[in-house]
Length: 390
Image (cartoon, rainbow, N blue to C red; front, top):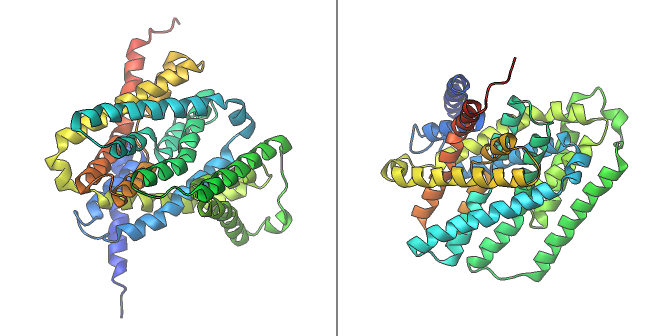
């Protein structure tokens, strides 16, 4: 009997993920960290069971799209728009601090301006895939702090498109006013659509009655909703994930939000796992071993800088110090979209292969340490907080 050679590799990959997930749960590691470690073990530098990293990454990008779509369905839009200062101030402060840190490092290492900007952008983005499950585990997703953290994450995701434009220009790309105008036009239209949804309140989907009670049709209708605006956003040169988020907000304002979330959640879990495992396959353990001190130093600087900047921003916007520091720790790691920025930087010549591997290693290290870092911040807070009187 003929057996597909992919089958034993798939079984082995699933076994590794299940074992690592069990260990990760025991040691309080978030699932994104488990997926990256699984990618390292299964990739070309490990067991070589997963050797198609570009293909896996392309498949996994749909997981990020669905992640932002489902996040949009859970957003309370009126509360998000009411606190618009949080994402604006938080994003501006984060980018400014990251660029300042990159400039100081670049000055010491004699980097060109393009590389400094690229590194600054890379370390300014936090991980939605890591932070969202942590907010849910801590029951913070509906709190004021959780809303602030989510709004900053969304602002960072929205900033990905202009960051890609700047990196392309610094790498020698030509300035295209038509493309830029299209991006501003489509981006403005989508923001206007969000404002319209906020004013309308509850929406009604066309053909909603025919979707009820039909799980198959619900899955495809939900996928169509998620990918349609993602396609429009991507064609305009914006982040596809941003378009998916807008679609999620629209669906979240309807009475059908519950079945959409339940229909697509399993897809999101699998595809996000594929995306992060693809990142793990790109990591070179030999490079990490040979440059461990440098990687650890840069990862530590990134965690400290991001925690401090975001804590100060949240405190400035009215959060108590305890919640501000916790919010800063939650946003401390470097996010999954930074892998995209690093890859574009390599493509346009802003970094060489060494710089690209260094970026991958630092990003992955901050993700691996994020749970320990957040737990450590919480432990220190608990020790410094005086006991409450009985």
